[in-house]
Length: 422
Image (cartoon, rainbow, N blue to C red):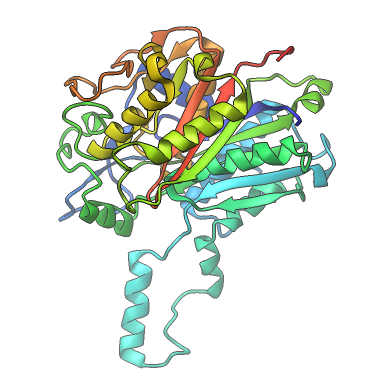
């Protein structure tokens, strides 16, 4: 199997509109959660989210790429991909177009409330099936997760493998894992991989609220709302953003003189076959994905220093993940450091796993583990080291990244520092 390294990182998140700003936010424990501004929230039970701020795609990406029909999350993904390529020093001439591909995790888009109201009103008043759509048919392209992926591919004229994965909160993790496999197995030399999402529409906020998944206790104190592993946690906070990576085959990257951020070592996935929204109390699905990724990496449980937790701030998920970590690591669980980026960013849904990979790479490169903020009221059932409130200086050789989604899909990835003699 070929070795796979990360040579470029890009990000647009509630913590900053590039990867360095995002890492700085994670490292300093800065919250990006605030008032929700993409919709009118009067009468809504939840009025907060982790949102991208002061973002203009045209200031970041050359127009010749083609910026039409991009959704809000698609713009985040395209900007993050462009930054990742610049960070990696890659352009259209670096490799043959057929040796480069794209793998993204994203939610499938849906019409906005205004669109649905206009359609309903016209159909009600005209009764004419040929006249009730008030918008151009091409507007439907904004609902496709593949349109941003195609724009990302045009950054490189990449004609190799292309994957669009919609597995909710594990989507970008699956996308990175499948890109890893494509390079391992020789189907590509370079893959742009990651995810983008923005579930801050009226339908998403209201839907997740009715499910009881979002916290509604912190509308007046947004930065305290996301509190993974805390005894006062009461639900997650929606976020948005895009995080993308350049993954390359190691020998090819070294031959062109690339800087290596980290190496992807293992990938595991599983399905809970349990409830749609809840994680199994015994941690069974997470156990399978973590165990598979660690076995795939070859480093063993003793080689993992840091777990970047899914850590949503819901009662069930945080307990299930803690239970799973204890069962996978046994006595080693007590020495691990564990933290959740969602405490600062909110939940970037399909892009959440990619943000966790960014946190893992940052910890490896800087020997600094980001904290879990808002952890002020310990839960006696959650007794591991979640790095409360303040980042910790500590060498990290290998990190395990978890992402668990509604519907019961789970992924885990193992990322490590590059070692020539591995």
